[in-house]
Amino acid sequence: MKTNPQVAIMMPVYNGEKTLPLAIKSIQIQTYQNWKCYIVNDGSTDSTKEILENLTDQRFVVIHFNENKGRPIARQTSLDAAEGEYIAFLDADDIFHPEKLEKQVRILEKHKDVDLVSCGNLCYGNNLT
Image (cartoon, rainbow, N blue to C red):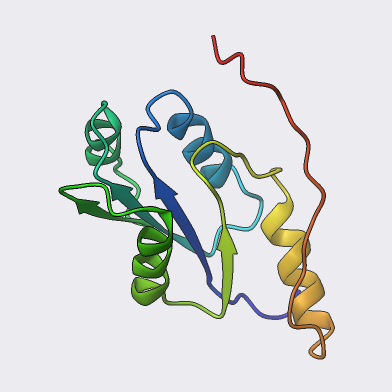
């Protein structure tokens, strides 16, 4: 890859204390490291706010709502704040494969006529204990 464009990752979260740490970790271990993640805490009432306030990685930009405004507004808020060449979406109850950003950026940089890349997904269930 000749260039190193920044990827803006957008993550809305509402009461995500059980899954948010894993989602955050999946971003931090990406093989492609030129990213910035915009997390919008959509008025969570669990410990989501505390988890986000303990982030020390400066690539995370956290926006807190005092009340729940809904996923569409949280997504739009992260989009409005985002800076970067490319945009990626990650919900707080999902994870990225470690090479996801690297592979997708490589495709986008190699094939300038491609505007959108996607990937498969895998359900790991709802047993988080």
